[in-house]
Length: 86
Image 1 (cartoon, rainbow, N blue to C red):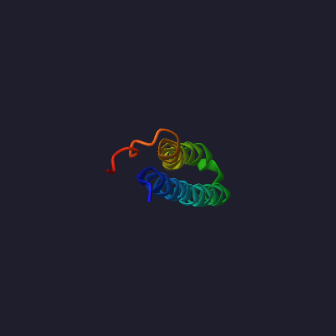
Image 2: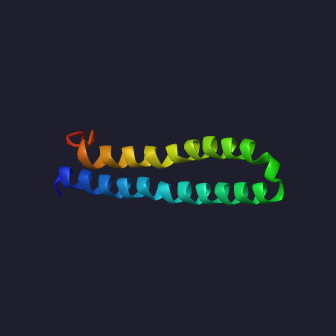
Image 3: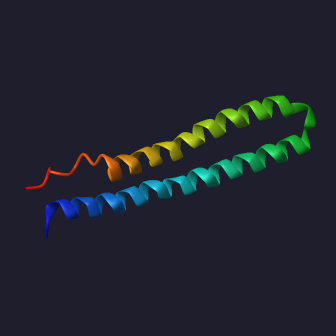
């Protein structure tokens, strides 16, 4: 078996797993948004505080998906492991 093909195959699997991390990020953002809407519905006067906290938390949650995308792109396009196996 060619070592380059093996490394590229494993990198494709790793990239797929890195993209799966985006599913958790999407679920987390959906849950945060639903709880924020629920909170605002219960106490409309706290809208400003809840929205500010929601935007900050969604930005932090989104970084997980961005990191997964960056790792997947590095593994697929600029693979640092090619040439490492004998």
